[in-house]
Image (cartoon, rainbow, N blue to C red):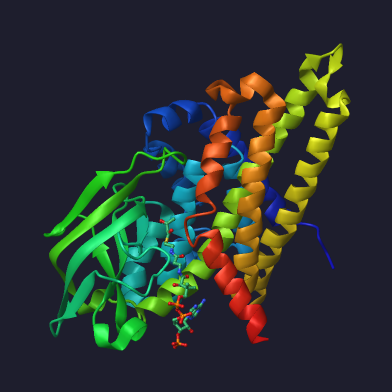
Length: 380
Ligand code: CAA
């Protein structure tokens, strides 16, 4: 078993680290405080190829494997988890599904600008009454022959205001349950489509999260992805990959908080010596490091499964469940090691803790991951 990264993967890691340190770090506290979407930085991420990492070069993507993507997200999240989720949604939930299941026309028209970062995407599944219970879609896409009429409300949509292209999941035929659900491509600015209020969040505050309102929105049939009734499976398949991205984000949050705590523990003195010389702190660091290593192995394994063409429903759920718990545990300990300073924004670790929490909630809560995992293991 070879655990080493390839030359190319090491280069991607270095490029992401360099971008995060030099470009994301300088304004990260201010963006968090003001809930400021990093528009110019996201544009730059597009120029560097971070927004269509796994998309083929034929469609303006970077043609990289999932492991490279995960490594890049980890580095970005060590500094700025908001920038990381903006990229993760565009890469995993929008570009991947479009390339995998979209028509050639859809790929030319939508995937190309999304993969190059000229446009940004959003994935619209959650609703006021359908978060975890995703088959209970109330948004409708009524079949009118050559078009659909879409009505309803979507909630907690990442990139909600900043996106240009939205993949919207909606119920066409209630009688058919999940087999009556479709996914359609909606462009910003079309009549009847409105961006709702922005959420004032605990963490990932520089990413914009909105509700979306659809009022008799006319969507041509050619904007449906896949066959009639494929929408729910599209969402599930896309989320299985998306969860690897969120697991990588969680891993990066944990690693970022740990690195700060490690550095601080070697500088801060108490009782006549650096606090790292106290076993209470050294053991905390040992536990944090061990948890992160375990999470990294699970996240990389899920990415490897996807790259090998193996089924990754189980490994992505395990990776997300574990890495998100590690992100919470490690970021809380990082605050503890920083003491009073940890509670102050300037030291970054309190932001890591706030950012960590969402990784246990979005793209399937930890409880949903346990449903996925338990169903898989009980079936075998
Ligand atoms: N791949 C392919 N098909 C799948 C699948 C997968 N990974 N998972 C389920 N399916 C299929 C099933 O096979 C079944 O099809 P058949 O009837 O043809 O066999 C169909 O989908 C329905 O599956 P279930 O009966 O298992 O459905 P369920 O109602 O029990 O729900 C669930 C399953 C796993 C709980 C699912 O509802 C789920 O994942 N919920 C969480 C939704 C979620 O992750 N939301 C996050 C919102 S997006 C977000 O957060 C993005 C953001 O902005 C950051």
